[in-house]
Image (cartoon, rainbow, N blue to C red):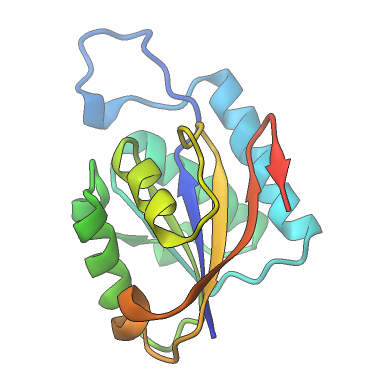
Length: 165
């Protein structure tokens, strides 16, 4: 059994219009959301073996808040450039190429791809993955390369405003 915790980056800032989309930081609300949502996972005693993130500033910063809550060094966050504006196919490929030494991964990425992806996994549907939304599933596979064809079961969904258990 493997589990994937899919997390959209927290709320980002649009204050500096000269920054590229890739370089936009979290705003104050986003920082608070990331801290709160990471603590919710800790409170639920959710195990995470690996943190895998887009290197875009808002995504990697969100991942750092989660890793810090788990006492995982920031340098242990796996950054994969393809997770920036990833398609559904790319998200499947990233998971398929994850080391099998990890059983429970947290994946940090962006919309719209992340919404399309979570809606393809199970019958539980989300209109739009909100910022710092956390959608978790369990997959009946022993190897990540079998993830796409494995039976997947909805585990939980949390956002800063809503939860589905």
